[in-house]
View 1 (cartoon, rainbow, N blue to C red):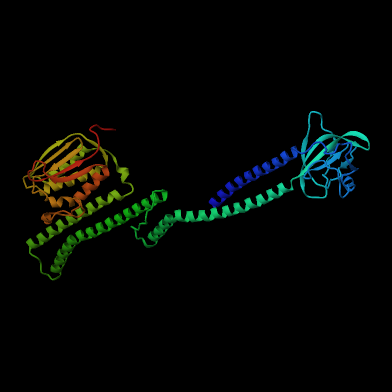
View 2 (cartoon, rainbow, N blue to C red):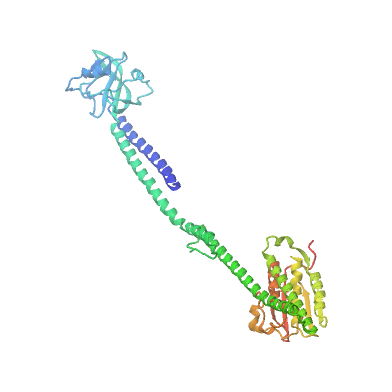
Length: 466
């Protein structure tokens, strides 16, 4: 509709301008033709046969059917107006022009001619009329009269009417064609929007995220479709990660819960049957239950830590963190967890923007891994230089084929399944470093010796920015 309206306005402007130009051109041709009409009689005035009357109709009625007096070509119509208002015609006159009050006044000497529009007596035909002065002899008296020379413009009016009808028809066809073409183009251009709408309605109705639509071209619609596909894919990946996290968490929780239920059932059954367990067995079972409860506590804490980056207020806890102090606090807790181990440290000042609790948890997880895989009296090297934190242990190391999976959630090396842990520690480290805008890597020791080295690089500065 907007296309048709715009085309209609454009056609109306062009058609109107064209009609006016053609009208001006045709009337100018009539004016030029009238300008060259004879100003003097072909028959001398004193010998011309004039038929006069008080009105044009009366004078025209006195003209014989076959006149002989000629003034000029027959396409022009002539009539004389005398000073006393008398109207006269030559013998070949066939029609008269309506007289206006100012026609009887002779033109001044400085003006040879004047033009006006008029109409014929007893007819709807219009005419262009030229007024000039002329000297005639009427009833033996020579006097000055006004000569009206008329040229019919009926042909011009007819041509303009035909042109107006033609322009109107063409304009109508143009508007209709523009409307149809606009509809076709709009439907073709908005087809991706319809597909996008269908996809959104399908997702809203079925909750099947991941639905995509084909992308054609590089215009705004294509960009919108690409953005929708990216959003839909991201939602699908997010749901997949959520489903996998729930499934993995359920799998990890099942083992300690099953063990706890077995031990609790055994204790209840022994008490119900009056058959007390030996003190050593009972103490071992209670110790296992305590260890399993601790494992559950660690696992639930890790799950809560992984869920924190998805909360809407995670940006609110970002602040300037003296990372060197965070590392020192983590080292104090690490020494408690490895009392027989040696910690070689070098910690330089470094300030970052992040979550203090999350950063401390990430460093503790790295230290826990180093303590866990180090020999009982081994050495853990911790250095913080220019925002680069390295934690190196001297344990058995990680096989090269397992390095790509160390940051996956719930992944545990086959060689360390017997050790405590949930497989979430390094995932938490990777998530925290990503949220802080840094990088994390885990690999073999750089000197080729035993052990593994974790490298955490965080953006920041050595001076306090506050």
